[in-house]
Length: 357
Ligand code: CS2
Ligand code: MN
View 1 (cartoon, rainbow, N blue to C red):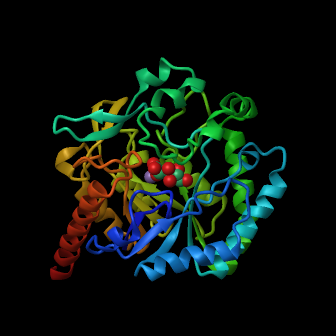
View 2: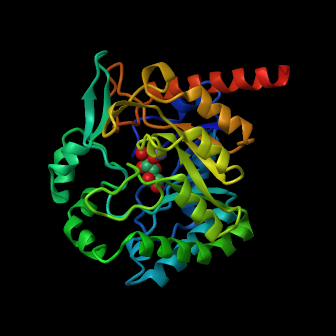
View 3: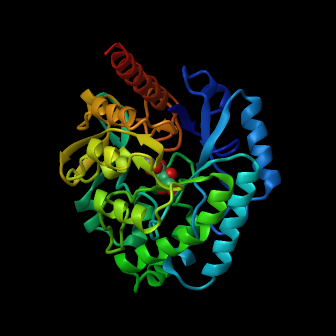
C-alpha cells in the first residue's frame, strides 16, 4: 500500500504540501482540480501543472478524488452523451499524464451526509456526526443551511453553495429514478468508459454512498456487499473497482467490513480508513482512527487489506478537529497525521508477524 493524504490544492486547502511531506511514511497525495465542475473536461495542461506542483514538493499524485459525474449521467437524461464524452476525454488526459486511479461516486444530489460537522466530544475535540432523527426532522432544502455554520469557511465537496441553491431542481430530476434505474445508468456509464481505462490502465474506484442507506427517499446503490458484487460482475473488468471506505460502508452495522474486503480481492483500488463510534444504530460520530476510540476493529480491517495483497493508495479518512486547528471539517492536518501513523503501525506489525511465520 501507499500511504497518502487527501489534498484539495493550493488555495483550497489549509494544509500545505510541505506539511504533508513531513508526515512519516506519507509519500503521495490524492488530489483534484477543485474548481472544475462535474461534466467539464480537465485539460492536460492543468493536470500537468498539478502534477508538477505536487512532485516539486517531493510527493506523488497517487490518484484523483474525485472526477465528479454529472447528474445527467446519473439520471440518464439530458446531455448524458455529451458528459460521458467529456468524462472520457478527461480520463484520456489523465491517462496521458500517467494518472492511474480515479475515485468517483454515484450518489444522487448530496455527496456524503452528516447532520453535525462539529459535535463536541468529552476530550474537547470536534467531529462529524449523524443521527437519523435529525435527517427525518428536516426538509432537504434546509440541510445545507443547518450545517453551513460549521464549515469553517471551506467549500465542502458535494456541498458547493451553487449546487445547494438548486436542491429542489435536483430532487425533481431524480423523482423517477429508483435504485434499478440508477444502477442501470451506472452500468451504462462504466461500459462506455472502460475502453479508455483499458487503454491507459486507469483503475476506476467508486466511492460508496454515505450513509449506506437511502436519505430523503433518494435511491442508493453502493451500500453493501451484494450490490457491489453485482456491479463488479455486470462490468467484469479489473478497471471497474472500488474505493473501500470503512467510514461509509461501516455506517451500516450489518456490513462486515473485513469480510467485504476479502470478497473484493483484486478490485479494491483505493482505501479510505476511518473509525466510527456508534451510540445507537443510527447515531454515530467519527472517532479517532484507533480501535479503542470507536466501534470498528481497525486491526482486522488492515489485516484483511494485507491478506488480499492490497497495493493501492490508502488514506486516513476524516479526522477529528484537535489542538485548535481551523480547517475543512474532517480534513485538518493533525488528526489525519495521527491516523496515517497509526495505520502504518498496524501495517508494519502485520507485515512483520506475517514474515516471521
Ligand atoms: C469523502 C467523499 O469526505 C468524504 O467523506 O470520502 O467526499 C468522497 O471523496 C467522494 O464522495 C468521492 O467522490
Ligand atoms: Mn470515504
